[in-house]
Length: 314
Image (cartoon, rainbow, N blue to C red; front, side, top):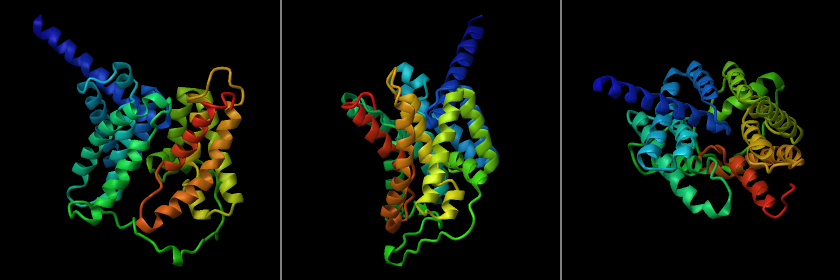
């Protein structure tokens, strides 16, 4: 009888851990839904089996650190200690190479959870969410370490470039449908139309409004980036869309004040703002060979949420 109770308790703890971890995956898109998290995991695994393993492992690591560290139980169960770990684990797996790649990625996932806890403390009095800032800063620094420490081997795809010899290439046609699905895929670094479709399903599963604002953010980003003369190859790859999707969901849905009728309009404007922010951040980082990641999303969202402290109807 005692053994059966222990087995039942262990099983419940395992289910709780997995549910929180799946929510950690869905929280990357600002959604608290275990089913959506599972669909996202499937989208990533279809794109790359190894990336799927890293995603789930990173989510579990971040969640465990939150649980074992004694963080607020509701925050841990909501997946708020998993999403920065997930993004960090995926990014370091893709942008680093060599025999230590997996170890560095998983250690990075653990550090992301600790960094998240520290940022929650530092920003507690501001009323502004930390979003993906821990993932961004941690990933940038761990990639820069590769220039000084041999164990960190940078992927050949990340090459520093001289701005003096930079040429803007806007040749070629724009495949709007491909750009639409790859936009949401790039949130998880997925350059895949099929994975993008599954990600949209995951978002709509959490609620039709989430799906609507994801579509709106992506559509406006495509139009604005094309209208401003962005590189067509980058538009098709979705590199102007993913920050806009996150921003539109954040401002229009997740962090809006109750009865704020202007929130949808503010969300679309904030999403449009991510396009020049993406171009600016990407250019700023070009000499270092670093990706922009979700910094445009963080900057635009912080800007509008900060403004709402003074302009509450925005």
